[in-house]
Length: 217
Image 1 (cartoon, rainbow, N blue to C red):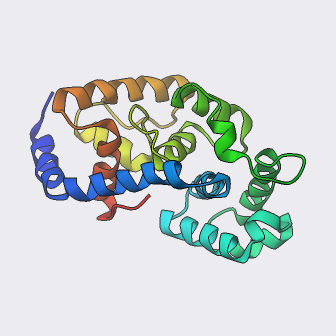
Image 2 (cartoon, helix red, strand yellow):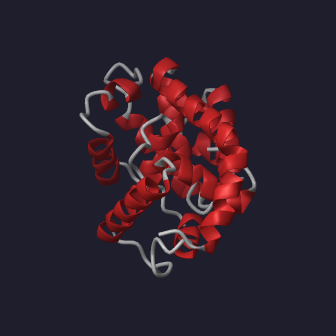
């Protein structure tokens, strides 16, 4: 179902399609070439993104990584690095707990090895939502897209939902998104993407670009 807004969006998509494809290939490369710590950084980044700017969240993670505090620091050591994101104390605690989950008894990171044991991105996402503090379906989907597993996953933040309503994929932007509603909208988006012949992982970056004029993470 294509409305007037779709044709505006389609023109923009054609103009930035190559940049979107380049970014998606970078995401896939993170998984192919990255190690356990690299994948941990991507997971940690998505813990910081709620109600915060993506570039600020990535700067915080980059600074934490470069200083090694992300890998060895205490919860208190992490907090000052998170002053550029919201809820810095809560997120510092979440990062500290995440590190405990993603290291073995010898203190070695196991992130990539662990997620490699799952049979599908959907199984990975369910585990993340149930076991990682501070990550809902949106953040879990975001992480999986950023490491190359976003072909069938939707990242439903308020910007994306607003555009999905404008495209008539959904009737209106919901006030709250339950897990059941999340998966329902995701399925609608999947069907819509087939109809308009734009891959699902592409449309997230496209709709984000409409809001931020940026193709980032």
